[in-house]
Image 1 (cartoon, rainbow, N blue to C red):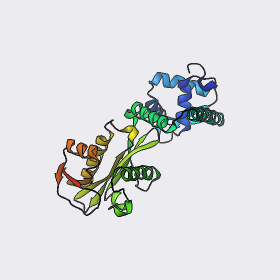
Image 2: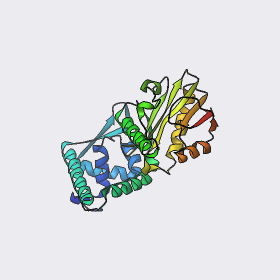
Image 3: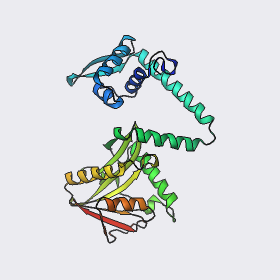
Image 4: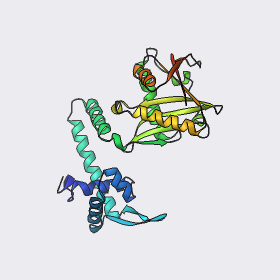
Length: 269
């Protein structure tokens, strides 16, 4: 890896920079932050890639103090070659493992742990692909865990517009380009909101992401003028019930006629 990562003639550091640019992270400062590099090393790696004719850099149109890196046609060919080699090696690893599902789950767990400080909380339309990916995984988990199963059409599923500003908001947690969690707040007459669809991928649990997501939702609810938040959950999700109590939520009487929840909480902002 120090001399010729995947046999392409350059070390891992330069290959990582090439990969970041190929994936669309083009602002030099953003690349540096994403890869955890200091300014000096970042400059040397970029200069080496420029000398190879793989990368060009130029001032950002909106701010000449910032620099933008782009792949040349030769750089794009190298990026695609790295992708193909990586995919081939990963496929061989999976093909020769007796339980590929467990192997993938273990790799997801390690990736989430290593990347926990680089996750982002992005406000999105709940109909966006990354949001739908999380919501489908959330509904599937409820169907497995509830004794009665779970059918989303029987639940009080909020309309998407109720989780868009100015009524509400919806967030997806992103890690290395992949969605690993979601949650939102549904607006009710401008004075209170209902927290909905809080879910974290099993590979990322235990990293305090759910608590950070709840903090983000509470900040957003305040910005939207809400003074009270409510939520519902089910006693068959004891870790969720415990988290809400730990975060200062107060148990209250039922406030809706959704057939699935049996525990209800409120928090004054």
